[in-house]
Length: 110
Image (cartoon, rainbow, N blue to C red; front, side, top):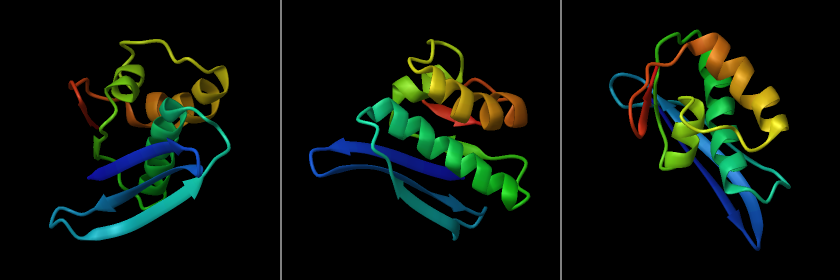
């Protein structure tokens, strides 16, 4: 299971996540910062980084959880991606092509 979050605040912007195994033990954790002042960017970037981490770990089936309905809708194709850079660097390579998502409202199951 991948749990992610992104944040935009006056003091800084960031993203992060954890990947847990079937027993709920954390197998990978990551965090980072970005100069982008867009919460949707941070949320999707967090998911994309997590999917890349899962790919590096050899995980091919993964449940992705996010508190951002906007990010879920973009990744499921229900809404257009507001940023061409985000679409090219985050959404397309890891999510659309590699994981072929199953559409589930507010929980993105892969």
